[in-house]
Image (cartoon, rainbow, N blue to C red; front, side, top):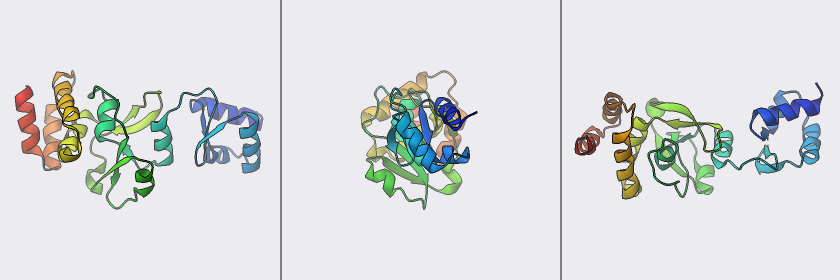
Length: 197
């Protein structure tokens, strides 16, 4: 298999995207990769990341690739999970406390932080609207997050999320209450759910 074939297969495997680091991991030199980018007219979409001309833009996937420690949360997770009636105007992510989120914030991304021991609670892999694998949280964890951050969440988003969750098949109320207790918002979550159920 030629170097060009290897790179073509990496682009195909990643849905039209390729990272410089992936090319290097496959044993391709930076200079050859640069030639390949020009030859295939790939577009630079982020530092060290390129996309084919015909690829559907996927901002969430690009963010996830660049900031692997970030998890889509709050309003963005509501949208991904079908608990929102509109796409949020900006992305929201959660990082472990102590992580540097300034690069994300500079790009207009809302950054939340949580203690390390709670960071992976409810962590799942889901798909971006364009079909790429990204990290988010379960519906239960997302509801707990928006209750914790309710002063910064639009009331319409808040109400829609709880109504949609109450109608959702496969909701896990014991898990919701366990997480609400772990994040110290049990009373508020219980009040919302009692009104809806």
